[in-house]
Length: 114
Length: 111
Image (cartoon, helix red, strand yellow):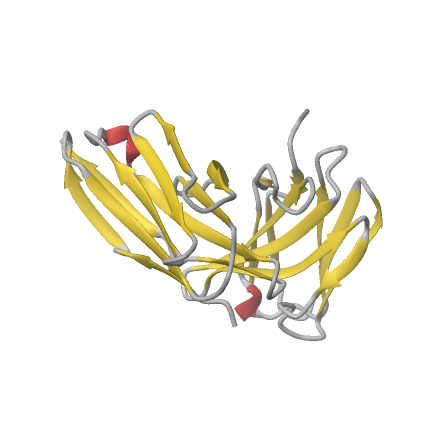
């Protein structure tokens, strides 16, 4: 298995633009998580899905952020409009039965909003 | 709200020495995870601890979980330079439906 695949690896965009981050979880994993990592706030859970259904989005910072999981093999995290304070590394992770065997993280997307 | 506290946040140690990183959490949980992150890289799963008294070892690292004390430890034995990285603990509290990471411990092993 190729692991959790995220794209793009790096994204530089101008303030006000829409940004879409993508994630392909490991096949057979029924949980998918989106995290954000910054120096100031560390690792923050933004939202997670179980069987493609959003379970908890209380970590989503603002209405500018939205996430979808249209099927078991694909999820997106969208920021519209983007702001410089959204600059961070965004990780996607997946697991079987909510972490019974741990979580596998993707390589992350480094987002820079200028 | 679930709180996860790691200490120390920064640790500089010499090769060959032993040390322990501590992870305290604030609520009932029986799922605790340790991860390693190298600069600019993703998180690598080290240990999954699922019950009180669980102890797992891999090479020079050993992790344990005491759910009654709400404490996990990551013990480093005879440190080597390759262990230099940031180590995170993470707690999944199904009772509170909350999942949080500690702030991380940046470990530097000097020759």
